Image (cartoon, rainbow over all chains, first blue to last red):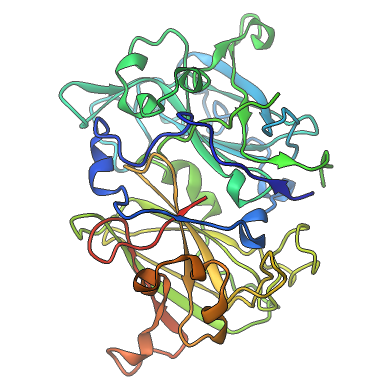
Length: 235
Length: 194
């Protein structure tokens, strides 16, 4: 792979560290000025993952247990691209989410919604030579949180991605179109630019729907960086 | 025509669900050359309270200063040294990992950087990750380091690990280092704008 070059974020496309409506940012945002970091080899390089890091069923969250998971089966797919629209092959994509009832299989989530013994809610995949990824999963549910009275997170899937170098690293969340909770959500609304916010909302996609089996949602992800030349996938 | 990168969102409090499988707190695989060291510390918030739901990702060169990827002009690093790991904080906000002391990687101007570990911090309450670096005490390279030079001298100590052996119990080995991450407030760690 070739090293990427990195530019500063366009105004409004990334959240600030301090966003008062998201209460947890209050004690966790830095107050001292950030120091501008020169991009050295330490920032331009990054871990490279391979197929030995991925298990056979890691991209199908509905079939990781003896029975099938409850809920609306969905195909979530898209492409991972750089800022010039070029495919990033071999990128590691990790996802995690609630079950259909909005409950995380995690000890910190003890709210009153049932667990599904046939659903854990995590998966991973490497993008192919055209930067594509595809997961089969269950549509997650909204869940209540303590940010403000009667606060609910809209249904979302957490995405974590590794691109060409450390500065391409992205952790984000994918939302669903038409969700009435979107305009009230402090996490989503921390992104100032409306177009940038909209790009976090997946698109209903007839092309990836499987008749009689699953609906499809499309979500492209753009990682920071511009690759100097196209890259090759290493098996 | 370029598209802006996708916006960052918080990792949230349930990241263990998706991230545990890549967690590693011991980077010293068999056959990896270098001095074994242990880094231990605490993540603290603006109230000085421990942060029990944070995750660190570390990235470092091997003992010869090479990064384990094809970017490095000095070519391949030691075998089976991934150079990358995730370490979560425990219920007390503490973390600990064992690795090999990194060598000196090149700087953009052709000089060598001081030995350092790149640390990225994710947690609930962070809408995008915090990036910092860990440096080692008594390294001659610290004086001229390309990145440390950008940091106001009064704040450089927040990036400097301290030898655990010099304070406290006599049975703490020399190769154990202490380093905390203070997200906000007194002694706030230096974070980088990248």
